[in-house]
Length: 161
Image (cartoon, rainbow, N blue to C red; front, side):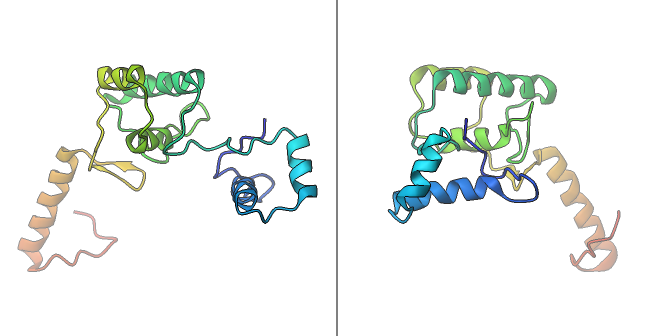
C-alpha cells in the first residue's frame, strides 16, 4: 500500500510529508496528470494514509488500534497514550488524539472506548507526555520550596531539587 504515515522518513527524506503534499496538490488541482497517473499505478490512495478528524476508517483498522490501546492500558493503567507514543510500530498516541477529535465514531466504537475508561478531554496530555496530577503537584511543591529558599520562581533549567 501507499499509506505512508505523515512523519515517516525514508533514506533521510520525509516521505510522509511528500505523500501528504501530493494529496493536497491533487485537491488543489495543481498536480499534473502524468504524476497523478504514476501515483495511481503505484496503488496510491487519494483519501488514504492518515486518520483525519471527520473520516470514517474501517472497522478492522479501528479495532486493531483499539486492541493496541487496551495493551497500553494494561501496561500503564490508563488510556492516555502520549501523542508521540508508538505501540507495535503504530502511532497509538496520534490515534488516541484523533479519537478525541473525531465526530464520526459509531455507537459501538463509543461504547468500547467508554468501557476501556477512555477520557475524552484529558487536560494532562501535552506535547507527548502524560503528567498525572500527583506528579504535577509534587513538582509544584518543589517549585514552592525553591521559591521559599530563593525568593523567586526563576528556576534555572539545569537546577535539580
